[in-house]
Image (cartoon, rainbow, N blue to C red; front, side, top):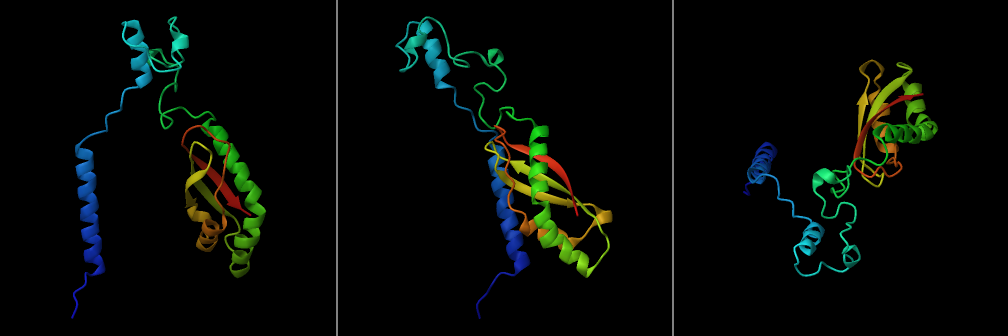
Length: 187
């Protein structure tokens, strides 16, 4: 007779391993950020040290490229910061408007595929209301989506259909990850 783990035991062991990994990972604190090599090269030329790498010779007169060698307090917002920390090039409100337009463009197909069959089977409630939680990456591609149902206008069959029938939404590249909430209703 072979011995196997029960499902609850396997879940418990897996959870313990994940918890241990998270604990050990968080114990070390945030990873140190490597200094900007361009900043060090720009400062070296002022101290009479060897010439900075190629491309910096044109600025030997003391000029610096934007964000190069300048202290963080003197940089423009978002300049020299990693892409994940930069402010979006497109506002959150504009991303929400673009996502709402993309959802509205798909409304007729969703009504035909999801709403009409559900209404034919059970006529009440007539209107279904949702809030889509959409997260977009810096290039404007959808990377996460959640659906929140309104309890008074809930139709689980329509919600399940929407989750499978709605393709990923895309927006104009915002320049950073952006999460928006977009109200949506059918019909």
